[in-house]
Length: 300
Picture 1 (cartoon, one colour):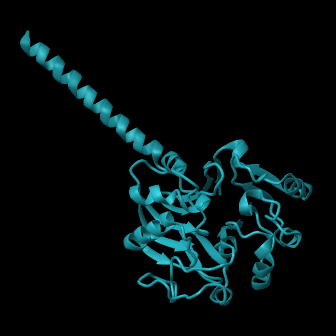
Picture 2 (cartoon, one colour):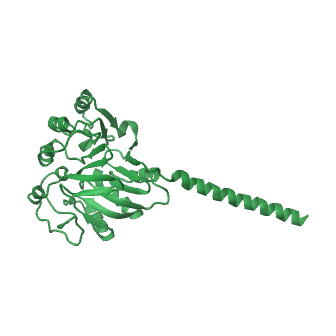
Picture 3 (spheres, helix red, strand yellow):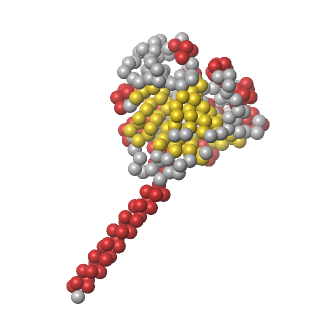
């Protein structure tokens, strides 16, 4: 009788372990991302955070104003993945960089791409020191390119000579990596930080996506002057959360996006500007907003 009971116990116990193992396998299978290129515009309120992912490889563009970005990463990255291949900080304003304070504590970052200018806030200064201690810092300029598993990221701004005339020194910081030379993180300037935003074009197959940071109408003529081959794109990440100055008429005429994504949340600035929305819709552009839709996922 005891042997029968023991056999049943072992069988039941074994089935429980098997069920647990099977459940774990299916959890891993279902959490494993597909092999397509996924672009996720995170819902981080009034700020920018965009996850570009293919398989288990990621590029994070900006990180929003607080720890909300962690929810976006948890929802879209495999639960076991604690490495982000690259972080691109378009420019060091609080609504773009503060989420990185939490990310550097939880994830390994292989490469950090950032504008050479810094923010005088003590929080950014501390973050910059942590980033320089943990990863390779690179300042991309006009003409630099990154290959990311079948896609190409071509940087359209800033232009090196323009930058050198706007900041006090390209040698204020040392010890960081560069795509060529003179890489810094935290040089000072009296110019608007928005104007130093990293602007890049992602090309994947026939699809083109323009990431513009906060580089709005105040700098878009310079961007066009230095990129005379820029033309119709598929998707635009609208600069500066859809502010009135987000798009100059000439810039819009040149890029003619099919779809525009505005990363925005509750704010006192009037973002996104209603006239800007009307202007884009008049041109037949499909406008999408994170404040209305939440997280926006695109699959290419």
